[in-house]
Amino acid sequence: MSTLLRQRVAFPNALLLLETEDDPVVPDIDGIANKWETPSMLAIAVQHDVDGEVDLRIATAAPDSGLVLLFEGTLLTSRRLVKLITVYLDPIASIRTLTEDVQFRVWGDHPREPEKIIIECLDLVEVEAA
Image (cartoon, rainbow, N blue to C red; front, side, top):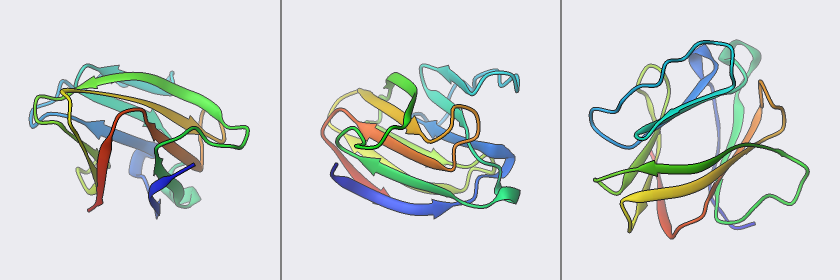
């Protein structure tokens, strides 16, 4: 697995957000599921910040270990940019792509409250830490 970014992050309200537009359509987060999505935003439940930091990785290949697939799909981005943010809009990283749709998979070590997350980019991307 080729890692583009690795860092430990505390996620308030136990949510990791991937946002593609300046004015994204925010999903209806009901607290029941572990992921919520719209064409311009994905929210994934992770370990709450009071329980510690999440080991976050962005990679170009599937993980070797036995992680759970939490999401597989596409986000649309006219700006060719996906931002990883917290619920307080604190930036974590930016993913630049050549296309207006970004395909990726999100893997975790637990189906509801993962403390390890791997975002597998299926397209050619460039990642920059915030």
